[in-house]
Length: 218
Image 1 (spheres, helix red, strand yellow):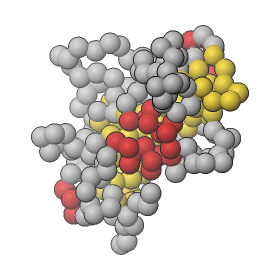
Image 2 (image 1 turned 90 degrees about the vertical axis):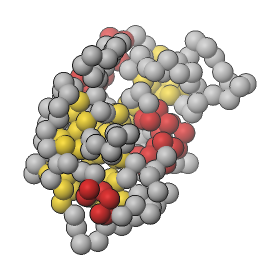
Image 3 (image 1 turned 90 degrees about the horizontal axis):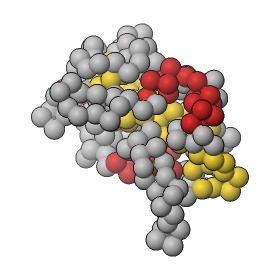
């Protein structure tokens, strides 16, 4: 079975470490805020100027003025701070984010990412995507492994306009967790119930498969 959006977020949360500053992009990455392991202290950063983003609010906690970069209402953790976009992007561009979690349309074997536009379709702009991929060393991309038409999104070479070049090292899809190195995808884990054969079939870029591929644990 392919992972749900929530399960993808849960698996990403396993990559968090105590004391990390983490930027969560729009879409599936924002759900990671709901799955920070208990007892772990991480500071979640939203590029619109919030450090210390908490879980999504309950009805009682809802504050329409407190939003993330995707304009979703959020909460603030103890010790959170609010600042302007200049401060936020100084943090991102200065390399002060320990982990960045982003969505993408395509990723290829060279670690290139296409995430901000599809030619011919209306876009609001690239937001902070290019700053995030340029300013971070540790990036996890979350995405579906294939399009709704069954076409792979893990390619030998991206076909859409690039957001960044050679910057992606890890990809978590609804089918698998993969590492990118030496111009190839390396299969690390598979979603529970998903076969290696299915992952191979839906991966267009060169894929290295070890003898044993463990299932993800949640």
